[in-house]
Length: 204
Ligand code: ATP
Image 1 (tube, protein in one colour):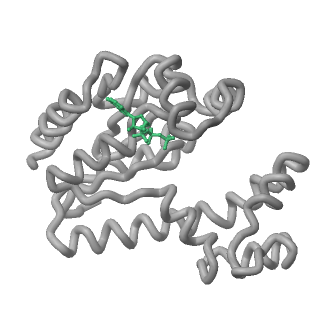
Image 2 (spheres, rainbow, N blue to C red; image 1 turned 30 degrees about the vertical axis):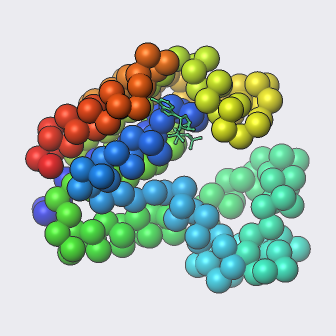
């Protein structure tokens, strides 16, 4: 594959610090592509996924604004797990296409390093062969729980349930080319220095 920019995957469990580290890399000159944001956009009013969602699930799953009714959909996938697979089969190819499109635009505007923030990168293996390197944000599970509870107000059990559905810390570390330790002992200033060092590794 010949392309002018390096494509770097950035991942980590919930609350590991992906968003924070991605912003720091962006400040060093990397282009940032946020797959969660693209997923939200395609299911928002007027989004590219809406016609297919309407066709697959019916108008009852489209809210009054014309976007995906997330409350009803959450209920449906809770009761019928196969609905999640169906929804993902609509959303994922669009996120894929959107990511590629944004990457091309970033390359065209001269970016040499493109960072893809993909929370479930390790879980969805299709990413691996498209990336030059994978960065994993790592911290103790207790740190994840504390950060997410502080940020979202979720109960401990709810955070633990999300973590259980994600890859394990070990699985993630095994997929990493670079592990960034962002534990309790890592102050934001230290994380910033780690971002500078990481960016330098990729020529920024
Ligand atoms: P999610 O998977 O939920 O999107 P994330 O992996 O993107 O989470 P962040 O949003 O970057 O994680 O971080 C979670 C919270 O922890 C945020 O409130 C962030 O400010 C804080 N945080 C992350 N790293 C540090 C750090 N090194 N020092 C202090 N606070 C931190």
